[in-house]
Image (cartoon, rainbow, N blue to C red; front, side):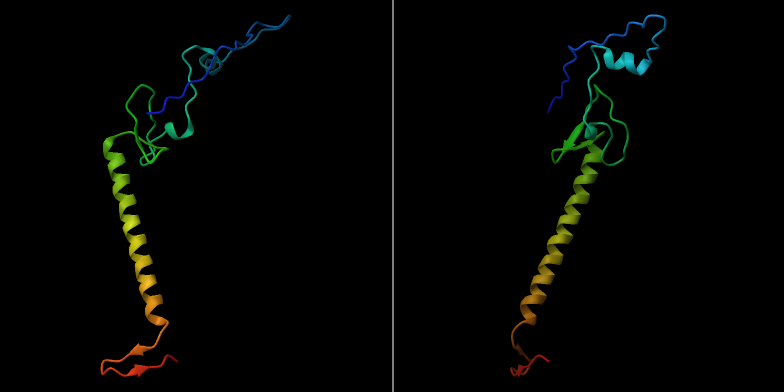
Length: 117
């Protein structure tokens, strides 16, 4: 499993300016905290059902950059991909067979040559 880390050694200055006050939002506080880790885009939601993936919970990977919330979602995607690959291979075979039989002289049921028009 690949682990992503973000170096948070750089500190920001949240001191108020002279004569004014600095409002720090909860999001800024989270980003400046030591426990904040930036998540890659493909680890934010399940590839199949789009359910939010939670840091610290199991994430199931498939084909490198596809993350899933459960074994069931991953298995369902694997089955869909397998079907698409089988259909793709079958259509390529059909196209190849049609192209190879259409090019040369054809023979009729009685053994005579038939010319293509």
